[in-house]
Length: 366
Image 1 (tube, helix red, strand yellow):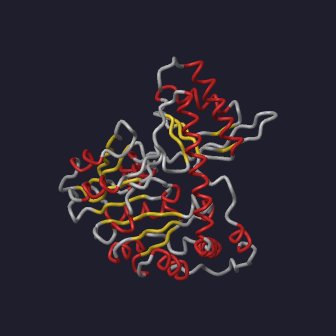
Image 2: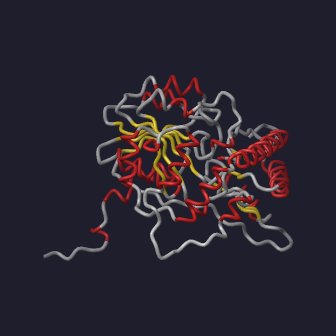
Image 3: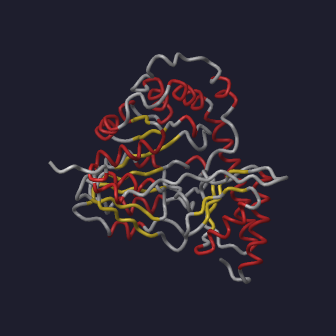
């Protein structure tokens, strides 16, 4: 018998799977407060009611409720849907991975915008699917006509991200309805709304309303961003019962811990406070965008808690300029994504951007 190497035991599809690269922490610089603006985290702790609830002791010797019944009921009430329309998972990433698991296999196709959330190609490749990334428009939004044109008989999954991570624009209602009219009913469309609470664009698609019209639509939302619970790993899917039942099969049993479930429930019960803080961050985002544009930068309209600088080949140099000021930003090679942080952090980024622009560019917009 031929002795197999460790490499030969690994599925060939893994060769196509990119490693996920998390946002870097800020470098220590003498005399400067470090700021991590590289992971789109909420720069404030959870609301006070959640912080107080976390002092309640749970018994770690017992497993959590695998169905997250209490949280599912709370979400269903909040969303005004029945409980069989909601599935809970360990963060939005697990929900997206589960949706890929239930739709994709070798020979199938998945379509997604690019650049967008880095998990999309990873989850697709893990299932052996053919990846069809579609470039963004000139204003850094989804090119939905091109995505519709890319659909074939082998397409099983389409991933949309609104607002789009890392560039920021949201999908409008008109764009969405036009697009969905071209999508076959046997293709699942996922609308990733990790940042929906920060969206202030009145023309953005009302996803919950769209669920009533399209049975092949499923929403992905999370408590990681606006609810400031990224470390607790709670995401959820909203869709038709048949899809939700399949998602529940594809998620890890006992994946969402009791403290996580409890924190999410408390945060939902104080969602007005969550939304007030989200709108405050949105206002700070808009001020930051205006200040960058005043310097001459070509900045897309962002509807999330981050801003995109399309720096192309200058991305690494800009990241390094931030590192020297104890700022961590996300360099994605085609540009740099900057999460909204406290005012002093954003002021420091603006100072870096002004000096960088003066040194590297003419008066033309970049």
